[in-house]
Image (cartoon, rainbow, N blue to C red; front, side, top):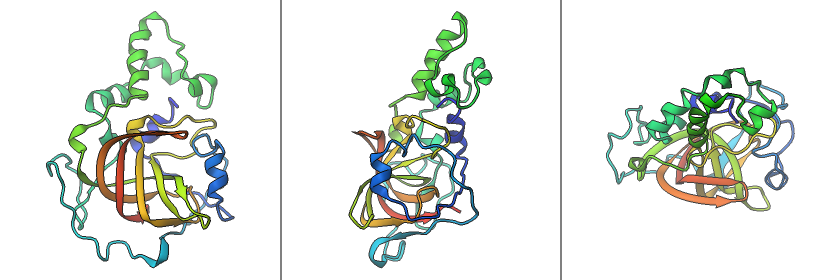
Length: 241
């Protein structure tokens, strides 16, 4: 978990190929969604991602009206009026500063080790205060309230929550990384977005990220897979290329 925050801040994408059609029920019932091993085979193909029943993203979508200031983000804006953001934009600035400057002893922790997975400190008494602040930021439920009501476009991986017998996904968690470490815990709540999409989304593989666009809301949701501090009714989506 400690190592994987670097993946969150930088959103390092690994495109991978899945040779058989995914079984969403098996994936969501098993602990392998957030605790997946990273042994999948890499490939250069982008997975097929399509809306259900022939819906064409963007054709009938009007430019969104935001409820907050349009100057919250300095990021590039799409032609439909969505500001492209990264996952670090969802973290309060004070906590982001702490996470980007972790205790020095973390540099000595081997990726995948017990200390990495469990977040155990190996530092002396002098590191305890800094470590405590770092661990609190790493598990924070704090949000950027000024984001509430903003029209955003954010990349991430899909963790299905609700789907039908045809594996059409209508609700999912959007997360910043997938399968980066063995037995990886879920991201902190302010790094998970609950996404609703009544039209339904079909995916051939969950290893490939997508862009999702919609109105971002500050809203705490909890289920057996994790807690999210943000939610979104998705308007459009695109493969992440």
